[in-house]
Image (cartoon, rainbow, N blue to C red; front, side, top):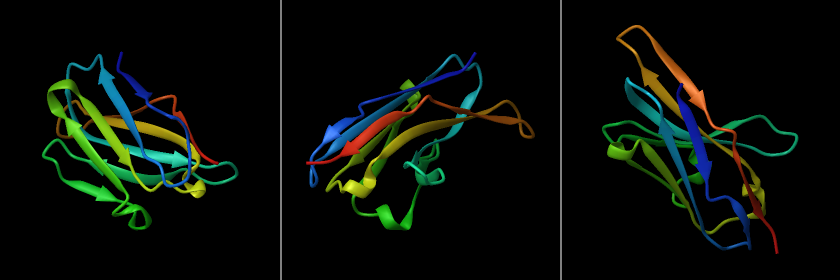
Length: 120
């Protein structure tokens, strides 16, 4: 059973920084893409950033320059460094991991989410 677990959320003041971590465990297959999404109250879940096992990254345009995604393949762990945080960054942040069984079959697993609140 694949498990995806986020950590590192919390309360931070505007302009502050926070680092989220997410570890995927229990997979016998390789994990290709890992990423972060977020969902603010009353809004749809949106992409934050993704990273492949080769280190290719993709960011939401509005977050480029403030957020940085990185990954440790040996640990199946992905990180999200968030700087210059704004109140509008307040959301539940979800981690996702894509497990590749073979060339035709892959599954996306999601964590339970971690709350990030940006407020003074």
